[in-house]
Image 1 (cartoon, chains in turn yellow, brown):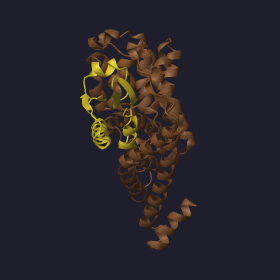
Image 2 (cartoon, rainbow over the protein chains, first blue to last red):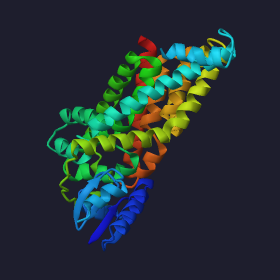
Image 3 (cartoon, chains in turn purple, cyan):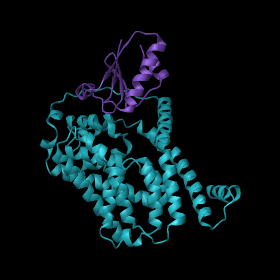
Length: 76
Length: 315
């Protein structure tokens, strides 16, 4: 599974990255977590508010930080 | 009820004398802080729930089919309900212009969104009353609409950074939140925002209380009263570096108004604090060339100064 955190390096983006890392650890699932900070790559997903979470190419949410529990619920 | 509670704290518990300077200042501080935090908590929560129904991707779709004028008005109105943070200004700007939202309409949104924000409105309503809050919303929208129309008429598309026009923008399917998710989001958003602004509110109200109790009446009438033609532009210039501190600035301004600062000057200052910010300019420099950035700042500043003179003249 490939998880991408979209965001241009704001504080919220970092929190989302940390939460995602913990959610993956707790779920025990195998996932690669990547920070995507380049504007063209973010725009390619059509996301207009950051941070956003993308799992296997699908935008799960944008413009908010989700809790560890919420992210665990989104993992396939 | 809040008033008697504030009286109880200041005069019965702490034991200050009613009518004394220190007593009045503390009474004012307790009352204003309680009132503002009650208003902030309820209204931010309600606004956050409303905003979950207006993600920027939806706003973009609504605006991309609109022409000038109607588009500018709609963009300024949507700026109130669409969540916006200057950290997302770049993806938002690119998303708008790429999907065919006219440049002037995009600017109406970019001006209204930070200016007509819930924190500024709550503080104005709580301290100055609903009339001033309504005047602020109304004139804020007019400034956003007019400035956007002018920028549109100036045909400045070539002063947008070239790469913006070549960007490939995807069309994300935005997942709808369930009602329960909306409530959770609103709760977290409210807590997060309160955590961020509470020190500014307390310090601002504290300074306001100090001015209220200690600064002589009409102290500012000479410098910032309606008769000083330079007061408005100076207030606007002072507002620019105070960005994002609306929560702390409004209580101070409220106390200054009691000491003779004119209402138009107050409004212009508030608008400069929320609408013109250096961090936002630096972020927008990623998508705008210097000339368009300067035009944007210049037109908004000029419009705000006009608002200041207008209300100094009529109120």
